[in-house]
Length: 248
Image 1 (cartoon, one colour):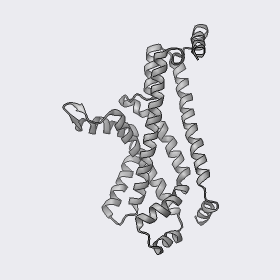
Image 2 (tube, one colour):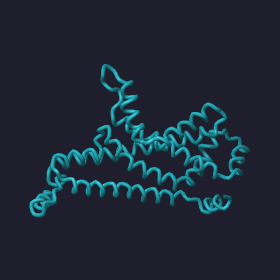
Image 3 (spheres, helix red, strand yellow):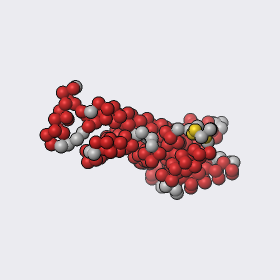
Image 4 (tube, helix red, strand yellow):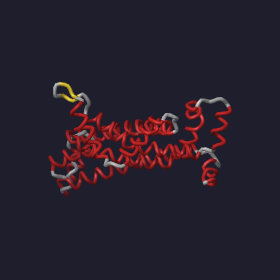
């Protein structure tokens, strides 16, 4: 493996292409840590935003007017304001309030996860709502006839069907969420972009690091796209989507 790293040192000497993340152990370590942080940040935000979407979509159909209004204004707030402004609000606004003895009680990583999850979750609520509305009314009436509670019908019947319909839209939103994790750079979360900026500031190799950064994000998004498409294919109910589309 050392011969592989040494080749990049030779490449730098011979051509001037300076990829220190391969031949310099320190840069290689911090770049790997940044890459891992980006993956962890993406996974945490994806899981939390999907949970928010599922719960929010269910709450939209609640008989409680206050709950429905709360979800409505949550969607309007987070869909119609820039995600960077939201991130600054959480970190500098709420973060300044939630502190003890001048020390923040919530880390910048936690604020990034919360902010980006709420942002993507607002879109997920609408994605799942559209999926729920595409479930045939006869199916909903059948759950009522079988004695399901509203929550029981949602968990066991409506959500599984709506989830299948919602996957294409969910796929697009989660891809955007992974790309939006770069905004965490603004509050010094040591993710891939932040670490790369530190490296190119130290080694003056901006073109090389920009190229590596682009390739890394293409790879990350590509893996997510392949996974989501396979999941969508595995969960497809033959004839269900076409029937829903024909009614529209």
